[in-house]
Amino acid sequence: WNYAEVEDIVRLARRLGAEHAVFGRYAGLPLPAIEPTEEQLRWAVKAVERLRAAGEKIRFGNCIPYCFMPNSSAGCLAGIAYCAIDPWGNMRPCTHDDLLCGNLLEQTVEELWLGDEMESWRSFLPAACVGCPALNDCHGGCRATARQVCGVDPLMKAPLEVLPSQERVTLTFYEGLRPQGFYSVLQEDFGPVLVCGDWIAPLFPEAQSVVEACKRALTLRQIEQKFGPTSLDLIGFLYQQGFIEIV
Image (cartoon, rainbow, N blue to C red; front, side, top):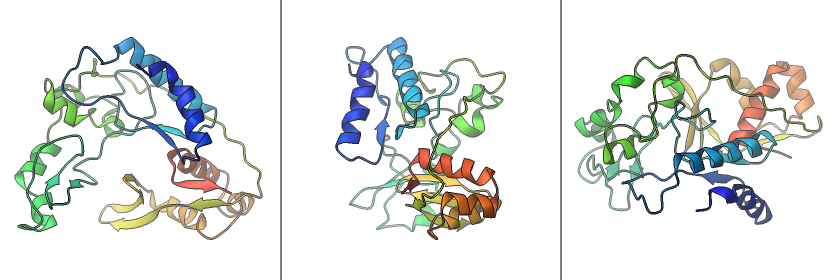
């Protein structure tokens, strides 16, 4: 197992010039001989969070249920904000799942996106998650693993009564540096969304001006003067998620 080598992997990624080190949990049918124990997985998650709090460019790949332990992974938006399409035009809701929703050579994107298979995927949610206060962020864990195993994410525990408090991470940058964005902003019916590779995040309309400022070569000081101190909190979040660099 490499669960105890998180810090070494991050150092290697930094030395090789990688933009981020991304750690994903195993998703699939049980493999008892090689799967880490829950204790080992918790150890690795804590290591990732510790390095992230120290300013390392590190994040989770696939999601980890918040009821398993507090963590900064993003709830899965597969089949909700994006999907997977192979070279032959086959559409699946998730790269980790073999659910075939149709073929783009035979039907339109809209027809497949609104089809029965995708709707079934989106509605696949454990009943216990419905009343959990973390649902909007956690989204019920990994649907792909849940479908293959027992109908729920195997890491799922009892629903939370309250949201866990998130430790505040402090980042320090010289005020003359400039944020450089590696994203695009798409306008959806429900509002703007920020897209960077296969990562997507909804964007509050009032934050859109700050996001646009990151592509206008303004310094951190100029952005703070123009939009206020909270704009730097947003920039820090985008930096941690890999949407921008500070140069």
